[in-house]
Length: 396
Ligand SMILES: [Zn+2]
Image (cartoon, rainbow, N blue to C red):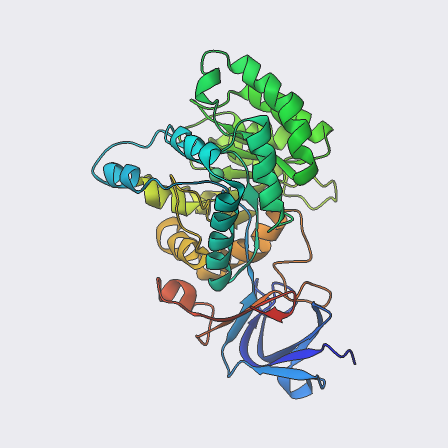
C-alpha cells in the first residue's frame, strides 16, 4: 500500500463513465481508492481496501471532475457595458473582441496572470479539474506568445488562437495578417501550445484563410480545433472534419451535410479523426441567441461535448454546472447526456482518455456533490452543490 493512498468512501451514487449502470456507468454504495494521484480501484464500499486516509462522502454523489474544453482566460478588462447594451436590444456581431485586444495589449504580465488564476480558481471551485485555455486577445507576435506562456503556467491544454479576428491595424490587408499568423506568430506561439484554432466565421476568417492557418499549425505539430458555425451557416464544421479536427466548437447553425460529416467521423475505427461537436450554451445565453440543436446531433450519433466558452464578451461564465443546466433545459439534452458531455465528452474533445472518467488508471479528478444524485446539477440550477474537489488526488 502506497503511503499516499486515499479512500473516498460511502459514495451513494458514483458516476464512472465506465463500466456500471447505464451510459454514465453508475455504481451505488461505492468507494474509490486513490494512489499517486490516480484511481487505483473502484468497487463496492463493503469491499473497499484499507488506505492511509479516508474521505467520507456521506452517501452523496461523486462524479469525474468537469472537463471544460473551450475557454478564453487570457485577457484584460471587461465588457459589462456591451452586455447591458445587448440585453437592451443591440445585436451581437463579435466586433467587441477588438475592445478586449486593446486592453490586453496594454496589460502587464502580472495583470493577465492574475485574471487567469482568478478564473481558473473560480472554475475549480465549481468542479472543473481540466480547463483548456486559448490565446487570441494579443494578436501580435509578442502578445500571442506571452498569452500562451501565461496560459501554460496553469494548463497543459493551451490553444493558439492568433486567428481570432483580424486586428484593426491589418483591417484592409487580411492576407498579410494570415501570413503573420502562419509565420513568426506561430513560431513564437507553438512552444507553449498544444492546439491551433481559428474563428472561421463571416467577419472573422474565411474558409481559405482558416484552412491555411490550421494547416500551418498542423505542420508545426499542433492539433486542430475550430470555432465554427456560431453566428450563421458556414464552411467551418466541414473544414474541421476535412482536417481531422479534435473538435468543432459552437455548431449553432448546421446543415444536414454538416451533421452527416460529423456523424461520419464517429466510427470507432481507431483512425484518430473522430471530431467532437462542442456546444457552448453560455454564448447563446449571453447573446440571447437561439441554442444549438443538441438532439439533432445526438440522434445522428455525433459525439457532443459541453464547455463554457468563458470570455469577457459573449459568455462570461466559468461554471460548467450552469452550462449543464442550460443544456438540459434549453437544448433538450437529458441530464445524463449533459453530464457525460461535460466530463467524458470534453475529454474526447481534447483527445484525452485519462480524464472525464473514474476507472482504474484515470487521473484522480473527482467532485463530491452536496446532493444524493448528479440529477441535482440541472434540477437545482444556480445552487452551489460542489462540496469537495480532488485534482490529481489532492483536495483543493
Ligand atoms: Zn470561443
